[in-house]
Image (cartoon, rainbow over all chains, first blue to last red; front, side, top):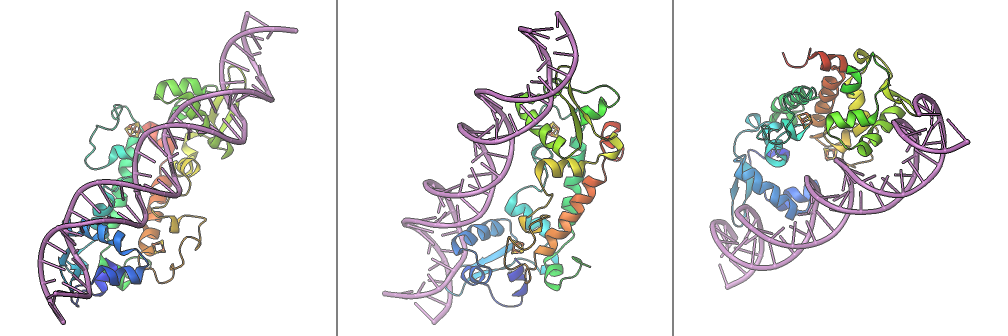
Length: 128
Length: 128
DNA sequence: AAAAAATCCGAGTAATATACTCTGATATAA
DNA sequence: TTATATCAGAGTATATTACTCGGATTTTTT
Ligand code: SF4
Ligand code: SF4
């Protein structure tokens, strides 16, 4: 996604190109981009001279969206993951630990939702 | 550890007792407590009527210490884990993503280091 | 003294997740 | 027509991790 952000003004970028730059196998990268496209974070152009490009400007795509798309809900424990409400453990009521995971989960999402691809390529807002 | 915090004034608590309360197998719990003792978060008393007790008051034991002891370094990616400086990836210099993981790692540690066992059993400082 | 109750310790196992590959189909440009 | 791409689903293989097992040691109770 960082490579696509850098190429945002250009035409589509092919998997081959990105895979070469980042030392990832094209086949694996392909799976990743399929998920990104289904989540509408990128658009695809099929056929020769095709490839992928960001669906929105880099400033409007945050890392939280990317990570949640590729890795699922951001959570330190299954029981506080978005979508698994209660079905993971029967003692969610009396559990004194759950609150910790909820707080951690919320901070994690905040951090990642607060960084955009634009921030990453301009190295702003990440390390002071 | 929450159970030990609740029993802090009493004598040592046995694995059997905790395992029963929390629905964990005693054998597994044993392994966990061995690590906690080696990290000097708990003291052990061997023999009949023995068990474990917190090495310090609940207010002086934070969740970060417990988690790092049992799960290793708190980090969203291997390459930003404490102790794996550089040896995980050769492109740490030009990597634009690493800064994100560093920031996330720091915030995660901050959250967990800021919650003590005392906070958990009194349900303060966790959920407003 | 013997038995019971507990921690100590090193291995070993089994299920699961995840990183990654394979094969083929479809679409588009040259 | 050919080369270059994405699309798609299934399969594999490795590593982690949750968990177990067997036996030794220490202390209390009988
Ligand atoms: S016991 Fe608490 S922390 Fe553990 S899975 Fe259940 S609700 Fe979550
Ligand atoms: S490429 Fe960057 S984020 Fe990935 S392992 Fe290397 S340093 Fe870490």
